[in-house]
Amino acid sequence: MSYYTGTVFEAFDTAGGELRAILGGGRYDSLGGELLAGIDLPAVGFGMGDVVIEILMRRVGAWRVEKKEPKFYVCIASSMFQEEAFSVAAEIRKSGGSAVCEVSERSLSAQLKSASSEGCDFAVILGEREIEAGGVTIRDLASGGEQVSVMRVDLPRYVAERAASLHGRGQGKIY
Image (cartoon, rainbow, N blue to C red; front, side, top):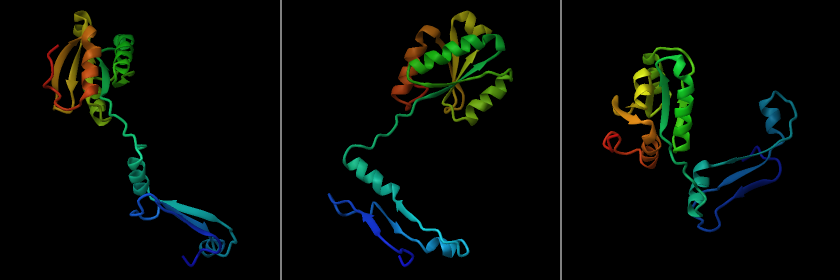
């Protein structure tokens, strides 16, 4: 604390008192000169602890944990299915998931590798067979590649169920 040259302050939890300082700081006019080869640089600064802030926010009910959305990567067997892929991605987003849509003409294998490397939970595969049948193939990337066929009319329900609970994937309803 010897580098402070003026006001020094700390903020503490007054309700419970068991926590260390929430934040602290002060004025340190000569510290800049010591660090910057004699350049006189008046300054004020502070530091705060993120853990203490989290504890206090949880105590008053202000800490919100974002709900994880299942992440889908929409793969296309051909660029001619791109418009359909955008439609599928929109359905996924409306149903509580997040979606990444393939826009290149890479191989399906390359797209599936991208889906895994981007941390997606599921790959949605759109090919000629799926489109003719009115559905999609969904590969569960976390389970090692289990696949299910889902009719497009059932896709919102499928996504909503995955959004409600990411546990027990692959053991849900058959579509």
